[in-house]
Image 1: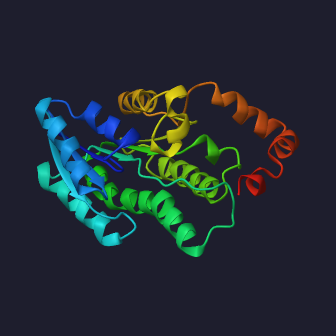
Image 2 (image 1 turned 45 degrees about the horizontal axis):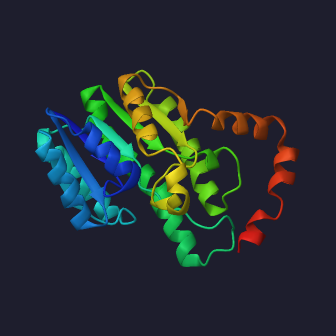
Image 3 (image 1 turned 135 degrees about the vertical axis):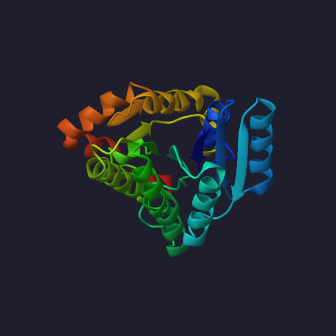
Amino acid sequence: MRVVIVTGASAGIGRATALRLGRPGTTVVLAGRRADELAAVAAEIRTAGGEAVPVPGDLREPAAIEALTAAALGVTGRIDVLVNNAGLGGPATVRLDDAQLTEMVDVNLLAPIRLMRSVLPAMLAAGAGSIVNIGSVAGEVGIGGVYSATKFGLRGITDSVRREVAGTGIGVTLIEPGRVGTEMNARDAHRLPGPEVVVDAIERALRRARRRIVVPWRYRISMLAAAALPGITDRMYAGKAARSR
C-alpha cells in the first residue's frame, strides 16, 4: 500500500492530484483547512477504489505538521510520497500588512520546509521516497511581491534538499506552473490550462525524479529571457505593483 501526502487537497491542483493518485493500492492522506471539502475528496477517492485519510488542519502550526505526519505513518508505517502543494497568493507588492505577509511565508515556505523535515526520517529509513514541491514561475521571475519571495525560497530549499539526500533513494522535484485555471486565477480560469497540466507533471516526477519541471512549457521562454535580459524584464514590469493597487 503506497502512502501519499497531498497538502492543499481540498481544491484546485491539490484536489486534482489527490483524485489522480488515489487509485487502488494507494492511501492518500489529505491535508487542508476545509474539513467538509476534504471529506468530499476522500469520498470520491474511496468510490474510485482508493483509500483516503482526511486530516484537516492549519499547516501554519507545527502541531498540524506533526499530526499529518503521524496520520500518514499510521497507515503502514512508511511515507512514500509528499506533494507540497498548499499555497497562498496575493497582490504583487511588498506593501502587505504584517498578518498577510506572515501567513503567506508560513504557508508557502515554512510549511513545506517543516513537512520535508518531518517525513524525511521515514523515507531515509525506507531508502526510498518522493518529494514534489509545487513552486511557481514567479519563483524564477520576480514579479509577484512576497509571493515571488516565497517561491524563490521554495526553489532554493528544494535544490538544497535534493542535494542533501542524493544517493539515498529519495527523489526531490520542483514543479513550477505558470498561470493555471484554479481558484487563485478564478477570473481567467476559463481561458487557462486546468490543474491537470500540473498533475501530469507530478506523475512524471513520481515515475522519475527530475530537478525541475515547468508547465506549460512556454513559460520556459519568459524564464530564460528574464535570466538573460533582466533589464528588459525590469522595464516590462516597472510600476506594475503600484498600478495594481
